[in-house]
Length: 523
Image 1 (cartoon, rainbow, N blue to C red):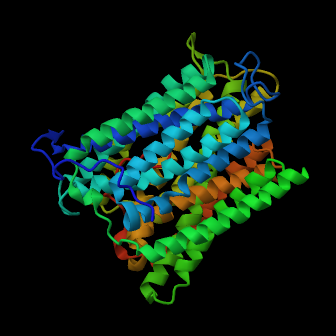
Image 2 (tube, rainbow, N blue to C red):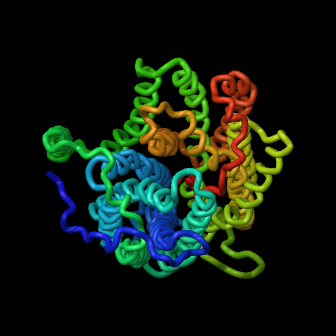
Image 3 (spheres, one colour):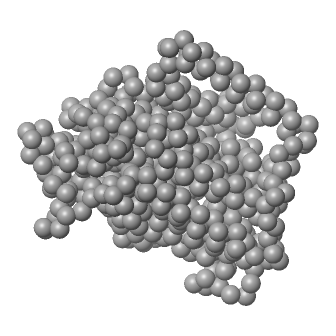
């Protein structure tokens, strides 16, 4: 049986009399944990596509070498697939906390895995790179749902008036980490040493984990509770099954390597297919569950539409860290008003806009709700889809200019990130909320993981398109993506009455939606 007896136990198990901006003192611990985790994650994400193309034909002239010298298409495929795989383990993270370790111990294990992954990335070479990437993805997926769960444990149930404000403070920590990461890790990695940048990401996560362990005395004892402990025999059975599947996969890939038929696609394509098949399989399993009543099946029919819309949104939106990041490195002037800066800094645009516009949107939805004019959830999703499509139609303009060999102003990308952020604020903050409200009671504990799977599906589709030969970095393809997203938003808007009719009346608007988490507000 897998145990975590080696992990330190919290001292006390309650909370102190001190507060953090009027909230339980434990919120500071979780705020800093997630801030440092996001600092490490978004710093590494800002470097990832640039490191992959560095030294190769797709790299910008004069850029730092010593990267992996991959082609532009391979770079886009790996980056998209990595973003997909980060969200796939979220359901496993929730399962481990609910059945085996509890949230606190799962977070500690996840933090250690993330640190190990970043340290591997700091080692030159292809095997350490892919091993580190896998560890960071798994660790982030295990950590994300459990830190959010622990924030909820700080308060006295859903009716605690401090609860919404506490999550808002928590979200600001996430966006702060996402803002600082490209400025610090991006600068060091892009201008001095890629591997030093990856090592700094490990340092950031280590700081977050250290203060988390030291600060556990401020957390409630609920964080060590395992709600549904797994029977010893059942755990052994699961371990055996997992071991058999892992062994079979290892044998297959060993045979491919020894026979000389192995290529990178043998690793990327199966992961991309799994990233689409698993979300679809989960939704179908829930939708076809005969134990659900008519109302629950009706809500799931509506949710399938919203889930598909979210998948399309994230497929386009997350190319801000791949297609747009590579364009920013190769085709922009790298300076504004005479001040030069690394292209990785552009990744800080989104969290800046989130922090500035998030409170405005929260206030706006409340104001419209009081006037009974707030858009329905379906309309918000349609608007978000339309805006992310418009952002790519705008992206066509600088791409067309750059195709003539002219470097464009980085402000083009900043304006595109602004449009995407407005779209994100329309769709993402309400995504998790509507998931928790529409999911059947039987699957209530899996709702956060279900929402994350929309990101996995969207990014996996983008990766599979690249692997099938579609070049997402060309002007015609970007234009087609933009048009398809706009048309998908229009289709959802025209279908809104039907989709809304399947939803509970309480979902006419979501005035309680809060400012989102950077790039994945569903955290």
